[in-house]
Length: 261
Image (cartoon, rainbow, N blue to C red; front, side):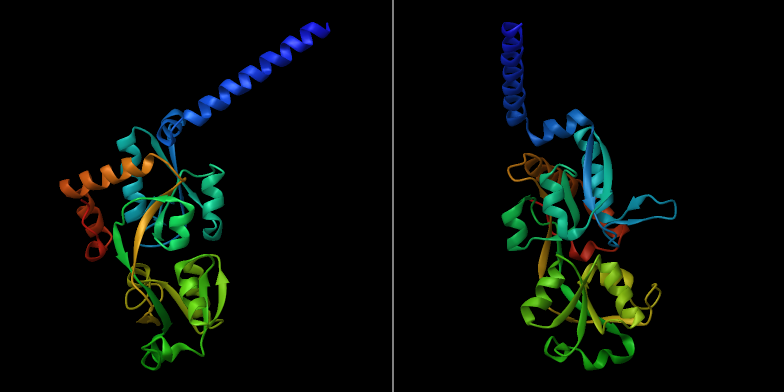
């Protein structure tokens, strides 16, 4: 009996070692293809990722992510995440990539393997339109209380300036805080601002003023992921074939698009 137990223990240990070795050799693209889905971490962020009337995720990033998944031969699955937890979600394999107008900050580049930049962007100040004339520069805004998305480039910019801020769940939530009057201003991405505030939008009484920086968007994968190389190849082919430009025009971000070489 003892010999049988000992033999079974050895077999279990050998199988564990084999499985561990296989897992270590498995690339990210193998992992994604094996399970048949590319799980994309996003937030509600028009015009990059947002839901249509039927509850489907659309937007420039969402459409490009779906096209990349099809190029890989898998389905796409979108998972709404807490932006501040994006690295944790990625490393725990709850998601396979972060594709949501993500600014390529030093912090992001240290925590993930990232694609080539594909869009230009900036962080801009959002204020009620009737007081916008008073807040045309960063210095004008020093006494304001800002709503910012937790873990975002906007939060980093406001913190670096030493201004008071209230972290909220998303950039959409930051806009709601300003509209409700619970915060004086918000800092969000310029691409979102162009789509979400001003005449003809849900926030007609808000506008954007001072740009705080200039930045670039990229897609983040687990450190060392071979999906980075594959996405860069896909971006290049999509740009050369014109599909990327058509998608950008559909969502009004064509002026921000970066040539893919």
